[in-house]
Length: 335
Image 1 (cartoon, rainbow, N blue to C red):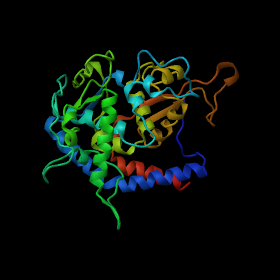
Image 2 (cartoon, rainbow, N blue to C red; image 1 turned 135 degrees about the vertical axis):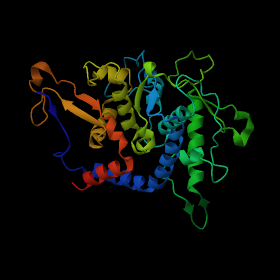
Image 3 (cartoon, one colour; image 1 turned 60 degrees about the horizontal axis):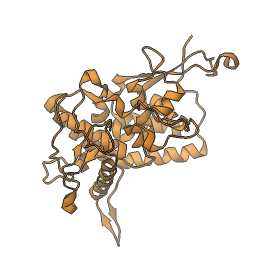
Image 4 (cartoon, rainbow, N blue to C red; image 1 turned 90 degrees about the vertical axis):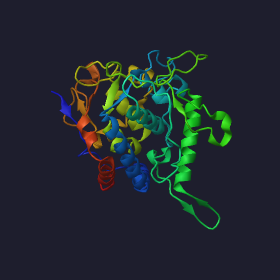
């Protein structure tokens, strides 16, 4: 009989894990004000078209060709062999997050199936009534003030956005039509097809908002309730895999064989461990099959271990991400 495994009886964090958790909790506290600003900005946009689903093409997270046979759970595929989303995963930095935010912003402006042919939003708001990209991209950046240096938090976010755009241009996921302008080269950036499915020498395809019959989705509250800013890149990668579900061997749930997970999604064993935090946050459920009360595989010697069944809890995104993530971190640290 299937058994469900939460984390109520998990062991206390190791010294190394505790240090990492304390750092994450501190960064979250510093980021909280800008997360709230970004949430307000996206919720205001949502009122225009009333978009409830954040749609992505499967090719963004699932590579049809797969990585080379030289990779395994012990050797993470190189970025060049990962699907676009997997290639943007970083231990720190906001490359994947910024790209997702840019895709969501386009879906608030342009209807399903239409081309996002313009981007008039400034990187930095021109007046107090504007919303710039520095308002929509939350981070833990704080204003630096000392005797030798004064740098605003907004300037730090602007620098991070420019760095992200340079990397996305190199990945052919954005075009910088004003690159020749020098100081303003990042303004008016344009999204290209998020699957990057084109010949190396061909012009990037312009981005069109995916149609529902040719995409998978997350609730748009993934954006408007701040989850996109609060999850680690590896957690987002696993979340996208569960939402996509390509290659699953189970119906009604997601059970991805290890070779598909590594070769097609670019998610090695270490990255996949992020599913534990997604469960702690209540965003997914994890169902163990053919396991005893301690979580050990039954008849492992003869049958091996059955794959966990993962299920997306769409209603969970309706809660405030800051509240849930900070609460989960405090609970774990209190053990």
